[in-house]
Image 1: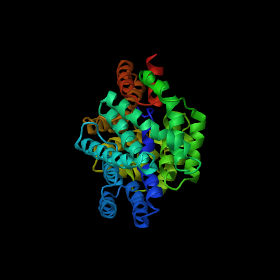
Image 2: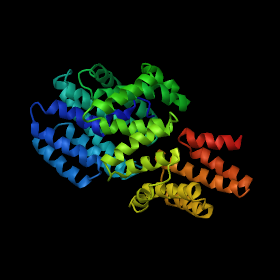
Image 3: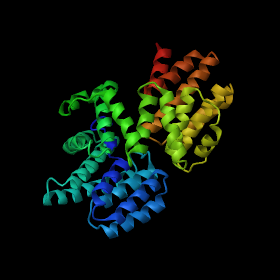
Length: 374
């Protein structure tokens, strides 16, 4: 459901970037605080972000920026958010509050660009998270409600370079997502056609020229090149930019290690993997064990050690259900399948590849598993 309005256009930097532009005219202190908050959110410094949220609320009460900032702080603290969790319910609550506050502003002025943006942000992120909790019809409904505002943003991209990100993501995912998830094709008739090549160029322009969207653009270029365009070298390029700029963000660290291993770069990853293995969230430990297994298997030819790491990853991630967790689960099963094949246990390898395929989120594991099974 990333495609339906590519709701991630509305994540951290987009929201804060547009808020800064529209609020700074009358409140430079709010502008300054929001700029600080961007850095804290990307470095997952949740305590400082909450402090700034309280100060912004004092300066600008009853504004939709407040519940949206609360939602983004929850996102920073718990990303990736498990579908059935208190954090998910808390996040959606803040987003519905964002929409309600924005609609109050729209009642006063239906052409207010600031209110239009926050409506788009609230409904857009709600579409993403309603989908992740299995409420598919609600997700489609929220996406339709955000669509008009997104189109307005497309028309503003020459004036506000930040909107190149949202426009580019729409153009790319509007075409790509139905290709890899045909079940959503019936829902795409409502949305105008996109252009994948143009979308990628627009996201790159956002990364080069925007102030607030640069990190978000790099994150999505990493994801697109690594998982959809089969160009892991390009994915690694953008992942490295993010880890250099935000070394305390564990999500960026996982993407960097994932891209490096996909390229076949095995050196210089041990410290990053150790940090993941020591993280207090099971999601990052799950990824850390997968990555450690891949190093042992592919760099050191230590198949017994790799097998232990892959099994540990599956154990650590037993209760996790997010798409990102499923990706690591598929990688662990594929690793175990390769080891079983190396030991000439071909029937066991087939069963493990079947499990890998069942959990696969991206083409790299899917292709490996299908090639073996066929």
